[in-house]
Length: 270
Image (tube, rainbow, N blue to C red; front, side):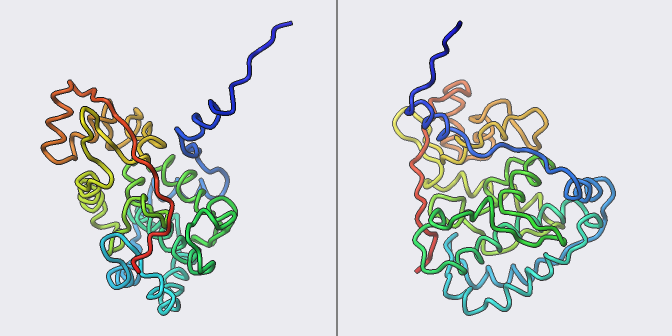
């Protein structure tokens, strides 16, 4: 009888820390509606109401939750439009933009519903249990990100677009994603992410990167990702400030990479 050694608790914890939830496509009605949008959707979705709120309530990536609480009716009106959206009819870029905005808007409401809170991690089930209406479907935040956005749209820049209400998350933009300008918005927001030393910097002979890219690094190099690169470092080099791009090039595209500590405290502006 063979005996297999079990990994130590420390090994298990390190393995869990090195990756986030898997990308796994939704099935059933959710998948059918998303697939129909991708195949033949042409309609647009208006995110201007959310964009107006973000322009007033977000500063340098941080959120004024008191503002959003005072303007909860406006936020709820926008989310009513999300709840009633006709998903299969939407142009895929509009669906992708709406889903990312919905994720960010519902994250804000989750914080508001549990105030005062010092970290989103203190809210039980905030990602995998709490349901939100999107196009008449009940979806959790994890459903939106890991079961729709990542597996169906295969755009690794989703990780700098959705915001988990924490200091080390990619910053929340003070505008909403727009299906008509989505590619330009994602390209520019990704460049700004890598230009911020909070998420990317040089530390001696190593490239120090946001831990988001440790958890989800495979998304940036997957064969079917768009955009993609053959290595995580090369993906960064194509979008990083020149000094960092030169550092990666000098290391023949294979620099030492370390990951920054992750601060889960609330991304509150005041």
